[in-house]
Image 1 (cartoon, helix red, strand yellow):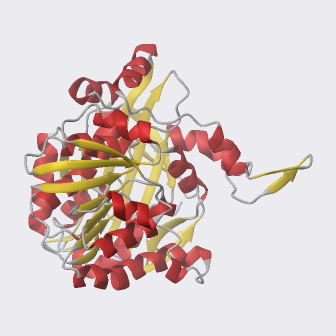
Image 2 (tube, helix red, strand yellow):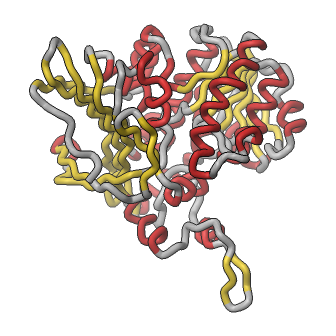
Length: 423
């Protein structure tokens, strides 16, 4: 029987806690959060949960709460990642992170525009050696994107003999009558919105401006004609760059494009300078624009009663898209592999599991990586990203996802060359 700690009991963390509660080989789930009420709230929905107050800025508090755990799952904001990783290494337990982490002490002298890339490289290598020495495993980037996206990208690439270009796209179409621009952490969402994005072009990682290089897609099955997607800071192109030869059949170009409600809300704020972290003085008062905007953002709903209240108030739209285009060669021919992921929307997710659609895909998508851990199906040692599962693990993940109603359709189109994604 296994003991696991989930640190961060927000919309996604609470979902992972509840799913772990259903696993027969789990003895106890430590639900840890700085807000003890948040941890207690999710424990009220569980049988095996134990609520613990933890300040993730204090490594010793993390280690004390996680004592005896075989796995720590980090669902905290990025800034706490180094502490969470250090705690797991010191305890000699496995580690899972829905993202990666920023501000790794060992790379803080690197230019800020290169720091994220240097941080991931450092995690793969130096932190990876430490986990391997402990005979344990760490997996980063295990939410919906990156996470589910990485598994599905691998599925696409496995259909090719050679891969030239990967285009990974998410369109957030769920909108309530209540003011709610994001269905996950507004802190994380707004941080991503103001950050320069990553792309892989001609085998090199480049930085692109947020909201730039807009493209348009028409996906009739989602009743969208057409939708706009743009550059957005995400890990996937960086993972592909590092792992192109081994896992992506030599892919030379990779993009992450994002669109929908959150983009429409955030772009004017970005252009007005209101997502900046730079302190400024207004009428004698010093403020940080990003902090001011965040202060006025609603928290993502996570408790069933609040989700039902939002649904009862009215839903404007309940759609979305999660699409991958993989361009390359198959049997000597130019082809495009197009994959569309389907997952329950807001209303269906609430009816099925008393969750939002975001909680359903991201939280349960993350949980499936956890399920690989707790069922002893992770045999890699060291630190890997979510795209580095072996083919057997990829297929098992997909089978479990299908049991949850997270399914996909895949079509191979001949004679299709990469579209211009630099527009």
